[in-house]
Length: 194
Image (tube, rainbow, N blue to C red; front, side, top):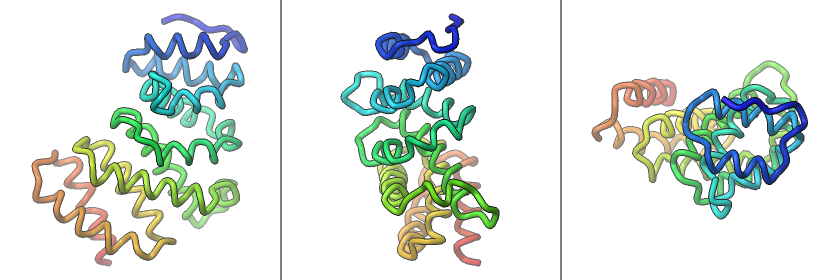
């Protein structure tokens, strides 16, 4: 694993590193942290866009930036929200759905959180759109699980979500998905029925 000195990564180096990035967690973490420490979050988010050629790798690294330096990502929530409306491949969307599941949980929890003032209606709607798109179009169970948890939280505000979500989950329970996803889907259905 290559070491990157603090504040030493340039935008061009970031893209080159992403072009060579494999799915190994330590590499995703290294680039996610380097993007934060080099003040390249804006560039990393731009590289998440499909036309960049490194979209899913950039999404993987953005997920790590968010998980390890969440506060540093807050100024970029508007740009992150816009990603949910883009045709990002399933590998990149898994990372984005994980981010939305964390943000939606913080937004709707009873405890005070800065997320409540930062996650605008527009961003929440973009995340809802992206999560429904994932749920309808992918067969990747991790993506679907993160999307379902996000949508459950968003449904606390948007009253149309639960009536749309339940039939999709019931249909997916009849399909050939793993027990992990089916367990998640059943848990959410039980909460919807409560």
